[in-house]
Length: 229
Ligand SMILES: Cc1ncc(CO)c(N)n1
Image (tube, rainbow, N blue to C red; front, side, top):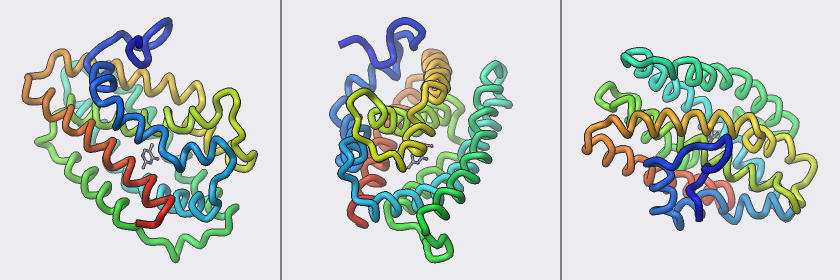
């Protein structure tokens, strides 16, 4: 199969596409999780959806600091032609947090009673460790790219042709599944590939390990949402 994201207007085959191929099974487990499949086929358990929604709100609050740290690393880098893309990603989280609060309200969830479950806390710890200055820009931006891409691919699947996604979940799926979000992920992918092409071997190795860790954490996050583990 052609590299993911390849083809016209996509992303040239690079390091990240090779990893998606090499870790294909785990990538599929992260992006075609039963929870996501249940949204697409319309059988989703709404209490699981609400759990995902309120947990993800807490995740995104934590994600702000991580994205800000990637932005800071980007700005310190000599080649900062990436700055506007990453700044756009950071800035969009402001609207995203408002969207979450609104959505949580609409689903009748009381945020005051929500605290992060274990898999979410584990993800928070991971994100925090990646804000450290020792983490290179190449590793951080690659991590940023895969975190966004798992959601893009997962929710994109829910709005693809043949979906039976419940109308009241379409807004959620469009947020991450839209063409605009896909383009943004592809921009991040091109940045990651360029950084990785110029990075020392040990940084490339760390970035691949982070890529795998993100897939594991994302699987854990879907598991937590669907089964409260
Ligand atoms: C758990 C998780 N991963 C990725 C994203 C994408 O921003 C998100 N909102 N939540």
